[in-house]
Image (cartoon, rainbow, N blue to C red; front, top):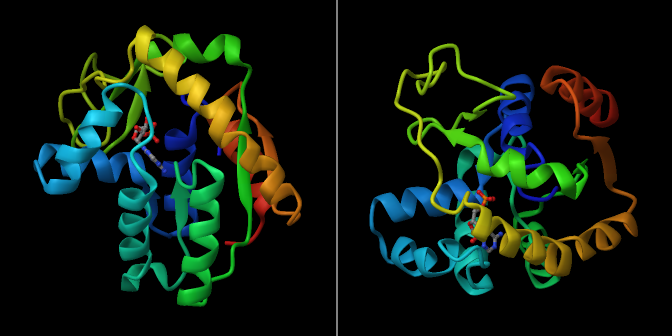
Length: 210
Ligand code: AMP
């Protein structure tokens, strides 16, 4: 968990690699559905372009379907889901149905004052999902993904106007989830400002295992 621009996607890539588990990002799934112009993609686009949440019924069904797949049997990382209390309740039910136990909730903590710059300066790879920043986390070659060599793009919802709505959505709907999971003693809060490798070390130390 963490607000837009906290570094969830960047750390998710490290976690996926280190723990060898699938990275399940509802944002990435929606972006892929939009590229393929599926029914879900067309519906999601109406909300995503405005910085609003896609309706829970659409999102929850997508997650349940994904978590039922075989590669999730050995564990997985959820990124960007749940994003409100009803989604967390739906996830509890999905876990019950699929006999899954939630181990930890990683909360990446970043002061709101730095998030707008991080998000507006973000550039992403449309092919492999790797994330960069025009000044803080530059690719080796300008505008080109280090991982797969594709041309980097700016997400349509990474504008100064949309990020304000997304931060409001985070404060009003997503942040209350921290209390929901604190009551279950699952929250590991990590300082999300600093070197990305050092932040990942903190995550490993707080989550443990491999
Ligand atoms: P992200 O890549 O996580 O920043 O997500 C980008 C956008 O996708 C969000 O601003 C929402 O419009 C939509 N989205 C992603 N995850 C969810 C979710 N769990 N519930 C509803 N909308 C979501």
